[in-house]
Image 1: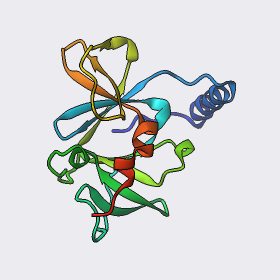
Image 2: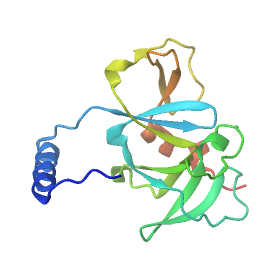
Image 3: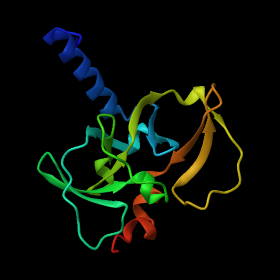
Image 4: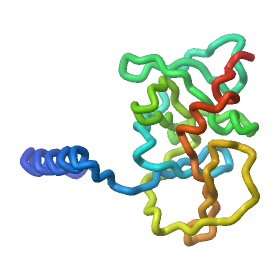
Amino acid sequence: MAKRISLRQFQESLVSRLAEARSGEVPRGLLGIQAGEEFWLTDLADAGEIVPTPAIAPVPLAKRWLRGLANIRGSLCLVIDFAAFHGGSATTPTGDTRLLLPNARYGSNCALLVSRALGLRNPEAFEEHETGADERAWVSGELVDPQGKRWKRLSFGALLAHPQFLDVAG
């Protein structure tokens, strides 16, 4: 059951968040997602939003990881199967699958189809993990959580500008 709050509490919360946004104080945080077998973290400031997976219209003659087009509040977005983009198996839409949209500042009408959203994570809970250089330019590092699980750090800017990501023709 959803928690009920008064209109006054909602307005006070909204005012404080708008004041933080104007002052440039962006809360530090990481958003966790799973794409296939890999666990990913992205800066909360880079993520636009996460939405349930809507109907996706296929696009002919495109790479297999380009799932198609989806209507997100009146805007058409290309849907990229993030696991398949990395050579994994295609993501089967279920109740857990989500679309991760990049922050509007990137000016990109695309969305990443992910297996599930894992919620907000505290950056202080992770430790840097030294690995060999990942050949994927959008992987900006690897972190380990207190349970020993490895997470790849996603750089949305590098992903959206990478020639491999931009080459969708099959």
